Image (spheres, rainbow, N blue to C red):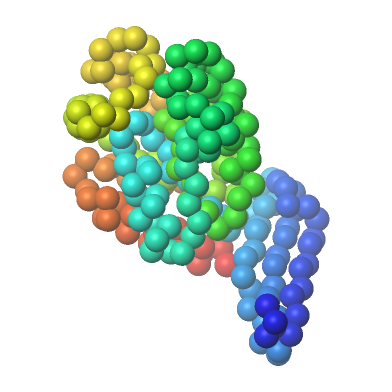
Length: 226
């Protein structure tokens, strides 16, 4: 910052559903617009989102893809499940086992609200965040939401491989993995679709291919509203 002639912040309204905030970096006579948020949604305005948010069922590849995107773009990386574990000082299995899924969702909601305030960050989320409308609203406020879709059979195969490697996730319903996955996807699929700005089926794509498609789509979105 020592070589910069000045840093000017122009706030027009609030950073909210009705406001407009533009951040300009001024270096000598050269003015470079860094970020513009167009948030007048009620009047049909467009938005320039600063975060990439990955949603989807277990083992859809969110964390792995998110780390690749962050590395390629230089964005920060945040995994909400990791934040939950860090803040609670317990594993997800321990939280659910002792306090139940209801308490876990309460903690998750607080973490989602906190993570939604970040900028220039790839945010990967737990599979159940779409069950709470507040989570979706918070994440979409400053996030380009991508649903990593996967067929039930593919997701179950990935979960089985994770289990063989010692990464066991607590059951959501107590049913066997196939029945549970299909049942939960029936409920969540319309919620994922409603929340998503972009949908990518990951069944036949490598992690790198998925990341590449997201980066391109995000870049196109940024250009379209800049």
